[in-house]
Length: 353
Image (cartoon, rainbow, N blue to C red; front, side):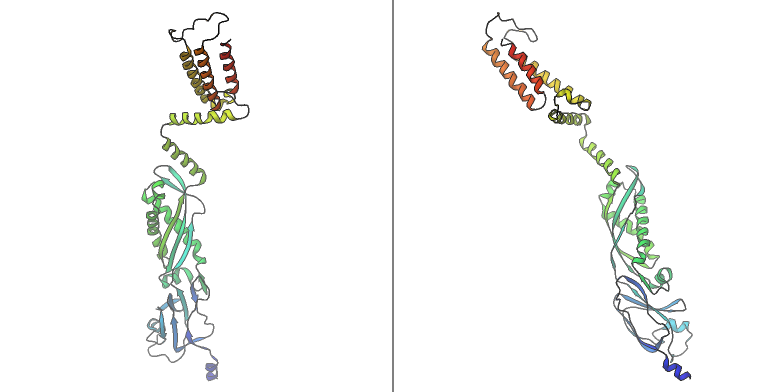
């Protein structure tokens, strides 16, 4: 009967894992009621590790290669099972495979802004995102702390934990550096190195090794970014008085071109512009009037009245014509409205009477 039971047993002669499912970090070889035959072959491929676990205790770990399982190749397991000589009968042991290749293009980022104290802006809410890669480095730690007895453990099972670890590392790195946001955002490579230094111990505690980390972007929330853009613009302008004058001068022709144009229709928002326009027009008219005064007449004094019915001097007609041309040019530039120009034109033409 015992012989028949032995014959009915299923024995494992070859143990290997081909990683048919992508993204697997740890895989438990299916044992069920099968036992490992003395002298069975263990094949561990490149980017893999294999470990024998007896009653929850990890024993022998094998790197890439092909092995014949004996007491010589399983010294730790032999000690745990108290084998004092070559075992002739099959034995049972859990066998786990671990993928040690790089897990690439893993994404991290701040789902919500992280509040950080900044030297320039005080408290700021920061956003950042990027990619990182890692590998499984210590199967004993990973098995004990992470995967346990699960049949399959994947990279997706770890994403949430690692992403939060990255955010914690980023926050610590920014706070410890003391570098202002503007300088940090302009040197993302150095910032990535600081974040990696903070994150490496967090990965090691899980039996992982952080291989690379890239910070693709550091930014502020949209409303804070708009305020920053305004501040940058003010710094670039420098002289606010000159900037205000420039903005007002630009607004005058735009307002004059609107429906119901004219300086009087510009409204309270362009009151300063109206004043500037009137001053420009008044100064030009005054200069033209002075230029049109007869020789020998003091500036500001009324010219001598011409005898009634006498024609206007030719020089006076030329001056009035020149004045009208210049005033018309001001209409084209939006400084004077058409109504103001027509009133001044009638006034000047009346002098030709």
